[in-house]
Length: 170
Image (cartoon, rainbow, N blue to C red):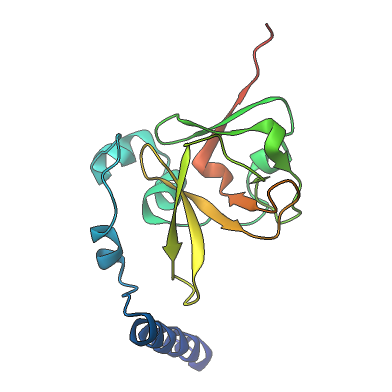
């Protein structure tokens, strides 16, 4: 049963999406958004992705979901190493750029050069900058302009979208 409150929020979101389209000329339709996406080096069908990802990883990486705040063990990992895409194993972030944002998600102030791409996300009606893996297109999280020096950016990532590889002793 849908409550009046839920119906009200859904109506506001739909109205906001319509207003956004009128003002910017851009559609917020997921199907339309996919049309404009580039081809990535690593591509798989949904069934192929499902065979290598957990249901939660599939939801986040392939369906642009978000894991609950505080649910990822990677949020508290500060050991030396590298964070890789859980979908294609591309190195994304060096642990030297990780910081405690107190948001409940692993946060970084800079990705590895060329490892991520961005696009505009209108899921919450207002525009946000979505971050995805540049190799497979997997949704990683969002970037915000409230991070620490030297970049002032906060790459707020879903921990389930990544895996951590500790630095090997030389």
